[in-house]
Length: 154
Ligand SMILES: [Zn+2]
Image (tube, rainbow, N blue to C red; front, side, top):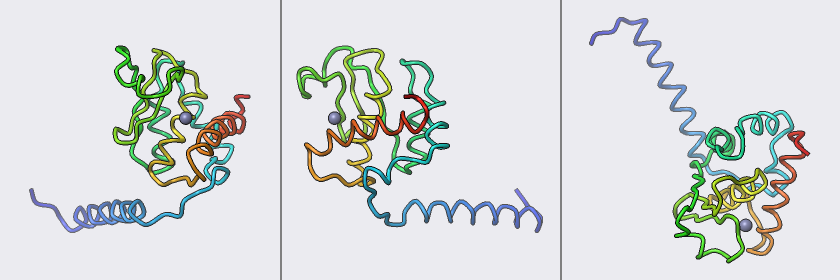
């Protein structure tokens, strides 16, 4: 492969843009409070528009991770109830930070649940700071409610 000067210049510019983005991702970030973590209205609307029904949240979860710049969270239907017994008996879903995954007992889950579990993902990845485990549960509910409200879904 041989490239002329102009092609090399373009490639270099491309590499420099990518490098700048990588540096931004790696830079230490200040942890956000619950309220700081709620995206602006236009972003909430855009994120929520990526939800396709109640059985596929893939596009939505990918968009959330792009926005918060964290590893994607997987949402897994625990058909055989393998993981859920480790969570509270009545829980519909539970987040496991070591797997970057939320498991659910149901094939379909509501938006509140997905956003609630995603909040645990943000806490696990030091994006959002909370006081303690009990605060985290309440804050996760609030996070879900605020995003749906700001996105015009309430
Ligand atoms: Zn929870």
